[in-house]
Amino acid sequence: MKLLFINGVNLNMTGVRERGVYGTQTLDEINADIAARFKEVECEFYQSNIEGEICTKLHTAKCDGIILNAGAFTHYSYAIRDAIASISIPVVEVHMSNVFKREEFRHKSVISEVCAGSIVGFGKNSYILAAESFLLKQNFQG
Ligand code: DQA
Image (cartoon, rainbow, N blue to C red; front, top):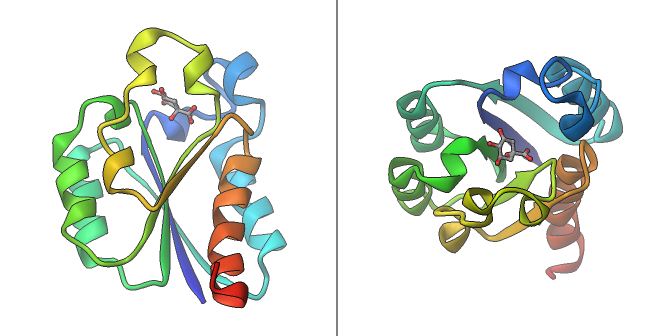
């Protein structure tokens, strides 16, 4: 199984920005923990601050599942929404923070509707739970 983890705008600042919200680990450290946990899975990690680059990555993805933290793009990017809708690989939306406990603009996701599911509020474990969802599906057809 191959999984692609895509992180959007500002996620490269994880571990540096708003540490009380997003934790102290860098994105590279988080990705290393994920890869170590899913040794049997081929994990690819991609981050971009550029909306169109994320769309292109989605269009050209070759994998069994995509785990997407689009960052603030989540709340307004119809381009990323349409890119997800244009591919047949399932995409799970993740957020490290519980967006529903935060500012109102974060309560709206324009991508949820075209994603297989969403996991929010578990920090780094949001990515791990999303990856687990693909493994469960593979093993139990759930
Ligand atoms: C985030 C939540 C978004 O609202 C925010 O813009 C981010 C990170 C999260 O992982 O909690 O950049 O996607």
